[in-house]
Length: 143
Image (spheres, rainbow, N blue to C red):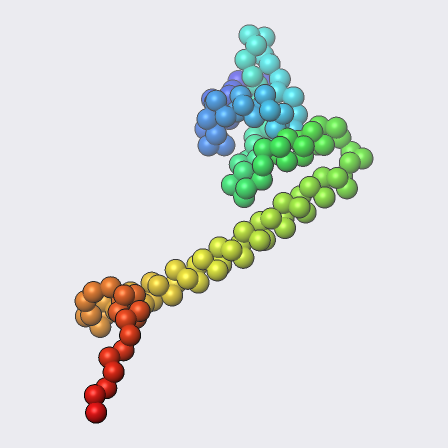
């Protein structure tokens, strides 16, 4: 099948998507081109399909909803003339990813601080929970 395209199993291996997911993506209109069929009715994918699916994997990993991927695929299938709408859709998702990155940076700062505290705590040979010790009031001096 190498000369005529790739089987669904080959595409699953190359993209990391399951055969079930590939069929779902086709049903949901997430592919940027129609999947061809061979003489026996089996799906035949092109290199372009694999490239598009690799993009879809990244879109999904970044939180893009299936409806947005479907809309983008529809616009690509329609051909030229709708590039402004494609750009708008991608810019909206870009803003979403930038917001996610900012939230993740905040989370990482918190985790980095906790890791550093535990490392210092353990390096000093201290016992007990360092966070509980910080929350306890300091003993008052007696005069």
